[in-house]
Length: 305
Image 1: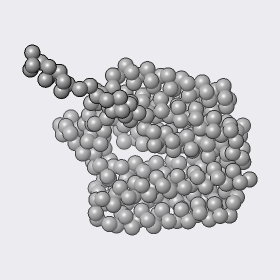
Image 2 (image 1 turned 90 degrees about the horizontal axis):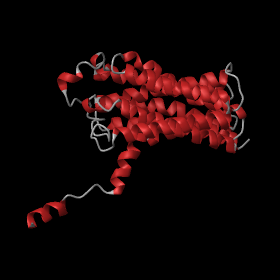
Image 3 (image 1 turned 30 degrees about the vertical axis):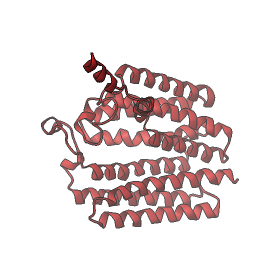
């Protein structure tokens, strides 16, 4: 009797905060906020002003991104077990029922797409659906088979600004939106390689992992650093081209964006030349902060018009 009581008293169920954390971790909140801001940026650039519609658009894009992220977790629940960076996620650890994740993803994707359709129009809905297809239908299954998955993966990140652009009633053939989409496409590549360099795809199941393609098979550590420098330089040049195209009117914000574009390449270069592993985390923060500053300057520019 006493033994059973002692055993029972120590068998504590996980607290609500831990359960909530497990569910929220599937949403990839930081990434989805960036996606939402990029859609808002596309909208304000097209409409040349910031409005309540911009916020509504950003909300529905973020919900759609949440749903797509949860679905990605469902699709990768077995794959994630093989990598140190992802093996402790909620689904591989079975801390969240797969059925719950599927229901959450379907509700959020449905709500996000419906919101885009009824609140912003047909074309934002179409491009939102295309983004989900590229990420969950192409990138997620393809990354387990081919390195070419980086193509639909990059395309997915280029579409949110287009969703915002079309939500403002603008057509596609415009240099501003093409350059803007290119900036986001280029930013994702050094972002990806920095993550790769940071984690080095640490193995938890060596034999099973050999069936999965990985850039570390083709590139050494120094070659990955070179890729980071090349793609960061292209990203920086794309921002400068965007500014030369007159997309940001405010001279102060334009100057800040220009310094951001030039500064990020010198900062990343300095870090890549540093041989200490801990500096890779600084590079990751720097490339993300650079994009945040760029989006912030573009959105604020239209608030002042």
